[in-house]
Image 1 (cartoon, rainbow, N blue to C red):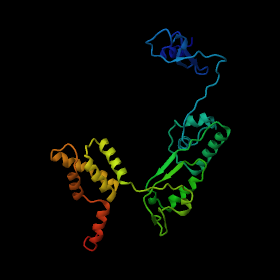
Image 2: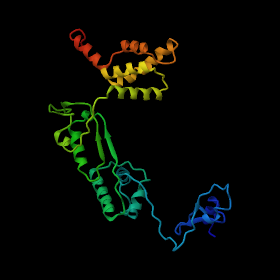
Image 3: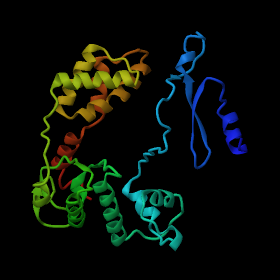
Image 4: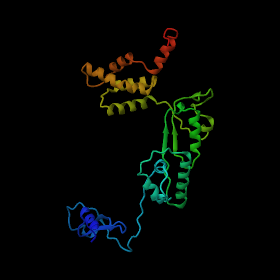
Length: 288
């Protein structure tokens, strides 16, 4: 018996009655499990029982590996020598382990995309699109939107999710006003998900969940008062009042937040709308 195969058998702790497979090229041994014919012999044996293979000996093994397009770009960012100038999947995967510092050019991306597309057409590879989430998308400028618009036209484009809280506003870097600060040509490509303000009972449910998560005890009356504040101002402001209200309650020796604690912290702090109104009323008095 080959010493390498013997070491593999010892490492896998193979015993009589085990089901194994051996790779012919490398001689590697892998223990699949114990034969199901031994399942009734030992009650306390915590083993995975597998059926004994029947039929022809398997001569091929399918290996599935998940790689991103960026991994392939990085792996091929530097020219390889002639001996490794293959265009198969294993050559690309093997090249991923070598350190690369060369810049990834558009030409290289195009070549990789062609190879990947050929693999997809031949059924060798399967494209699983990812998800690109961009928050505060109104902060992007015209050049970013142009690049994003072009990237979305590719058949290898990920699922793009854009989020913003702006209405009609100017596209950054221009004097052009557009819905959500997004160019109209890009906006035509999107499916817009409508959102609505939270109702008071929904705000109360969210606050209750947040209080439970932060292990803060709140009375029902205080929770209703916080929900009313959230409806008047914003949900974020109401959530932020939980911590100072809890500190105030602990200071006076209470184990849970009461309505008077909520009322006091609401007087101590301002929400965004109240602060903006104060600055507007004090125009000419408070200057930059």
